[in-house]
Image 1 (cartoon, rainbow, N blue to C red):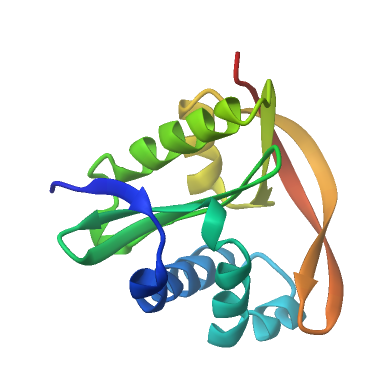
Image 2 (image 1 turned 60 degrees about the horizontal axis):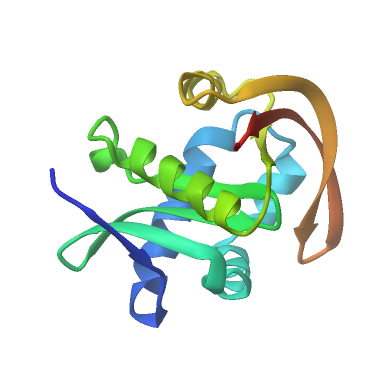
Length: 159
């Protein structure tokens, strides 16, 4: 499968939301509290994607969005690849791109949050050179306010 990495724009929003929502529910629905799952609606993903459009890159094949990766300050904030594009090298390309973008904005190290128990993602991060720094609580933005969630914090030196 071939793909190219490009900046997210308005024409990609619907497909990007679909991938993010499906990927989030696939990876997290059985790992996080039911209350958080109920707050992660299509509208919530669209709202957050609008907020992060400037820091989001997508992988696409033709006009089809296959994955996305967002950064936020020194954080690799979100990364999802469609089920059909997994195992094709897109996740590695999005990760390398995000690390370069973080480095290019002056960050010497970066971090990301991984749901406790998401072993598939944890193995991928470790394969990419990220180190599990233990459990930390992050404050997730939701339509009902802040939702505290214990996560595995992964860190990586970028220089």
